[in-house]
Amino acid sequence: MPFPRRPLHATSRSALSCLFVPFVGMLLALGLSACGKRETPVERGNRDQILHRGTGPEIGELDPHLSSDLTGYNILTALLEGLVSEDPVNLSPVPGVAETWDISADGLTYTFRLRADAKWSNGDQVTASDFVASYRRILTPTLGAQGAPLLYIIQNAESFHKGAITDFAKVGVTALDPRTLRITLEHPAAHFLSMLNHTAFLPVHIASIEKTGSAYERGNPWARPGTFIGNGPFTLTEWKAAQRIVVQKSPTYWDAAKVRLNAIHFHATESRDAEERAFRAGQLHLTESLTPSKIDAYRRDNPSVLRLDPYLGTEFYRLNVTRPFLNDRRIRRALALALDRKIIVEKVLRGGQSPAQAFTHPGIAGYASAAFIPTDPEAARALLAEAGYPGGKGAPAIELLYNTSESHRAVAETVQELWKRELGLEVRLVNQEWKTLQSTRRAGDFQILRSVWNPDYLDPLSFLNIWTSSSTDNYTGWSSADYDQLLFRAARTSDNAARDKLLQQAEALLLDAAPFVPLYHYTHVFLIHPSVKGWHPTLLDHHPYKHVHLEN
Image (tube, rainbow, N blue to C red; front, side, top):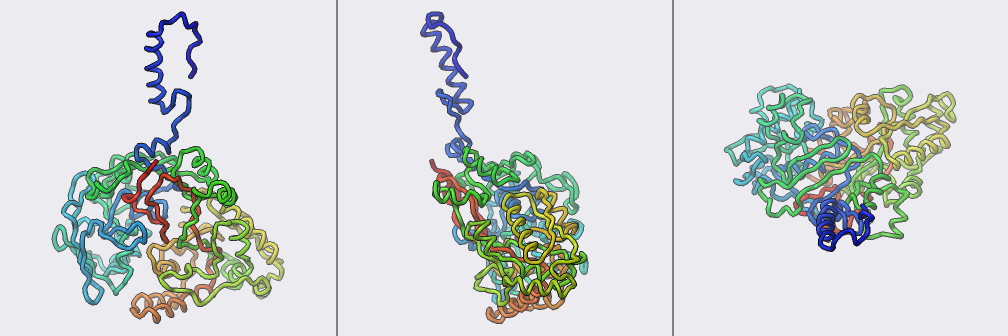
């Protein structure tokens, strides 16, 4: 905004001062300096403790009992707190709403003592009854909560969820008094405390939910600014669809004195390239990811902002076994055997990922699969010929669906080329935005579907459980009573060596049936501004926000 071009003698020095002072004030109010340099959101954020975080695709839901992806988790853990929280460095369970707990000698009964100063954002006390009501809500069949099976570890929770019993008092969750909660398990589970950080176990304020509709039916619009009542370190203040979600520091949070951030802005984008440009422009402190084509340039020119963190997760393609052609195990095995995964991780991704020849991530809780899917195009061609399609002749075209992303497209194009070259198959690529793809997945309206699984807790069961007959995360139509039984026995086996053997048998059965094609094991590749402090590399990519702050 230039000054008016007027002769200097036309205005006195005092008059010029009167014009100049408010002008500078206006510039500063607009975030500009007198020389015209605009202050970036990151610079303002550093000054005002406002974190700008990229989240990837737009989320569809902020109801913790209906949210089902990592993006939802990343936002919800700012708004809600469970019985336990996580250490910011190693994610071990630490006190949350519960300040202490006791575990019975047989490992079945957990007694939690809740804090006297735990409050909801409307000022209400957080009570043991709130947790009982929340667990009842997610287990009520009419809600159709995808995460409900996670609570099956609680005594009689599965029976209630499936309608075998209707009296919730028989489920192993009891409020002994306003500040004492007792949870009884179906079987001992050393990882139970870690499970409590999943959104399925987060509490909700039932009374506020019922102000906008039924707490036990989908479609209730309660999880929006103005009606969302939480108990976490932040409160929900803004949600602009496909743009951003804003949360601000909560004055009612019991540990508010330790929360140094005043606000977090979660920015949604379908494009990794757009997210990287926003980072360079000073609009983001953190990206959710980074396009593989940009990794080498950052390694060379700006390594201080590039992070390649260890991260438990497996990228894979789900195969719809209810569809013709893919309902043949030999076809599915051929698709899996034909891929050279080293090409994908070394030539396409270039972010330290490793080829996946099984489903579980190597070394999770000391477990390793004993069975593998190797790269063996010759064996793949033999299976395809055995199924009646030598060299791909007579095989129908197959459709590979992936959610919009530059790297997902690059991987899909590589797989398309490999299946054409090694098997003679025609593969058609289709992409959808993330929210649309989620609906397509639920409807089972796909042949081959790009997928990823990040475990809910640090145990191989969190990987393998998704393929059980009762899992709401399976989506392939494949099931096996033998597989279910092996996991049932493993969950109830306390001896680690015997447990691992059962899990290995189950994973071998799964890999032989091939309802999926493993691609690679994750690393988290992203950009982070040097001003962000307390953002530690963690295996689940969890980062408790009350331990994060900004420094210039």
